[in-house]
Image (cartoon, rainbow, N blue to C red):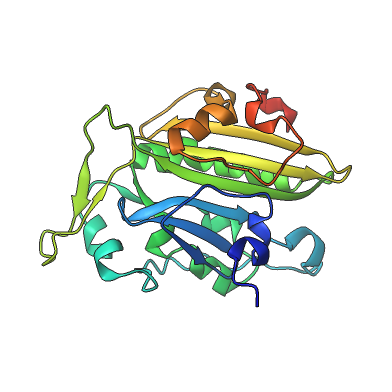
Length: 248
């Protein structure tokens, strides 16, 4: 009997960082942090199977907006809707809703609060959304077979950490606000080549071109703690330097 999620989940085929608990979804996987009461990482294949298996007359599933707690997690370690209410922060998707439109059940799963991190509105609705849109454009290219996306909240312990929470909760459960977010994008091309881009963005209003936020994957791994694509051996991807966004 195989009980290793890395053997079962397609999106984990190239590896993922360590975490406290692996939450296996129908269409993506979450590596959860009990300490931070949110994902340490999420990993997806964008529109998994969409380019190959969707019918020609395919109609996108509607955005469901059914935000809810993830009951797979112990109560003490999971976020609640009340924690975000009037907090001043968005329930920021890690796996984007617009990346999951093949079915209603796929879209619904992205609204679990385990797939959310507190994000400023200026960040979530502007440059983070812009990067999500560019990843979808990459995935829609004719020469791309699959696009893997790893999202990671980042906490800088040299800086104060803001908290949000439900003041009426008897356990006093609070959720820390990430200082920044990492998005590492691994594309598998039709010629068998793998290409990698990793971005680091502060959780605040940001301007400029997306290429300005490219970092080496190795540096991002040191911030988050753990290798990102450790099963993609025999390459120098983890030491890659910044590459121009124009590559896609």
